[in-house]
Picture 1: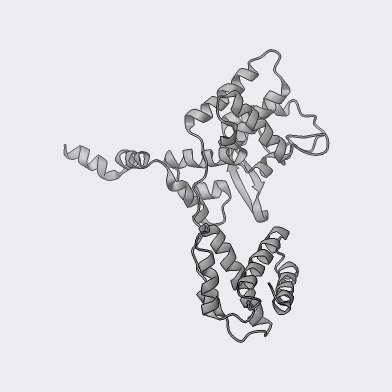
Picture 2: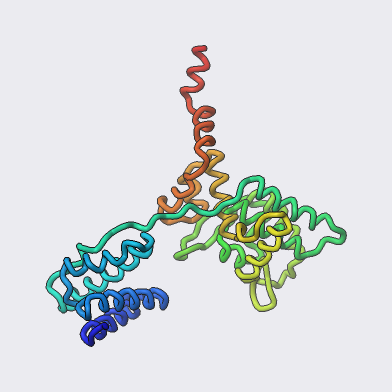
Length: 301
């Protein structure tokens, strides 16, 4: 079991992570579990462990997913960094810990045919007479998700006047308070204009609710119901999946990766690069159609 010295130092480490690093509650809970399990394995000797001891801990992690190993190793590395900074140790044995790197999974997305089925289901709803205002709202929501790649939170919290009928873009404030300019398609602006006519002029949000704006949970529910209606398994459709579809379909159509990064609001180009998983045949066709040497070869023949 974890001895009193390990317990005390783990508690001090977690207090530091909370107060100075602002770690979230879930992060603190995961770190505490990882550290206590390692301490138990070392019979209470985590704080004084050497590299050989840490290698024995790492052996226990071998059956785990790389993401789990990366998290556990990060917890121990931060713990030993804390011990060194606070003078509890003069060395740092964490070099013995593995650095597997979490494998970034490919994003779930939809085919263009799937997206067409979603819009067809919306069109069928709107064609009913009289049109249900909720269907007009759904049309605007989906047009903005797929047409502009908005995040769910960005979408539901849009101010009533954020999107203008005569302006093909809007300014959004995304993660970290970073502002970006997002293109708004003609279709999306038209759908928003029809919906906004249903929203009282004194409402603050474009998608209002009784207490503020439409919630993310309600947005998820609306999309799941639409997916089922369109004959698509509901677990395949979400706001984030439509954002992924926006990115994937633009990239497969030849969009520049840097431009896509700006539209999505990614701080790091590496985050955007995950969308380069597009069908290789599309990339080959793009080269064959667009590369200048293709024209040169055609002229020689």
